[in-house]
Length: 305
Image (cartoon, rainbow, N blue to C red; front, side, top):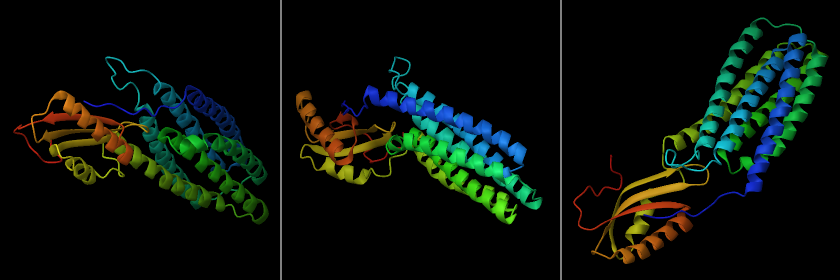
């Protein structure tokens, strides 16, 4: 029993998210193609690694775009939650690809450091500038939504790290051009990879927690129990589950023992008060309560089902 407080975004805003993702996909396809050709011609591993990362950006943006579209589909008898978790799954996939790409870059960087090669630095410089401008524009497009949506944040992080990687490639190109420090190419590639692992790990951890139905870190279960137990008519609250469905929905289900054998209308009144407390104090917007009176069951707060 219970209801949810709606937090849905407007239709226009969702369309804008999709449009921004499409623009970013198109820009990154162009950047990737240019960097692959430029990396092969110039012999720059940093440029090729940046192209590989850009290609992973294209894939991640496509995954994010598909997830964004799926998340808008309605629930059905066979999919009672609809596709509300599509964006969390996309964030998990994108975070995992960030780390995989980083490991591949580290392996290549170590090999190239052992055998440094002369590189056509002018091409590296110009293509890195193009990548900085393209990714910079994409970063600005996705920045606002990245603050409230894990899927958009995963796409944003791919683009942000790639823009920073392009800045590093530009610096390396300048050092190679004016100081012939060709080993810088490998060192920068290694640094880019470490940064990808750092950024990807946090997002991978956050999306994994949601997929595993872990209690959100900012939800104090013990305090919630204390607040509900403070109701005069409530004897005990137990068998609690709290999980995050997606970016907008936090669910709580629990069993509540009542002091007296109350009527259904009395329960509805108390339920409404509990829902308002949980929503306004803890931002839990979906509540499912099982009422009990004199039932002989386990009264622990957390019960192993």
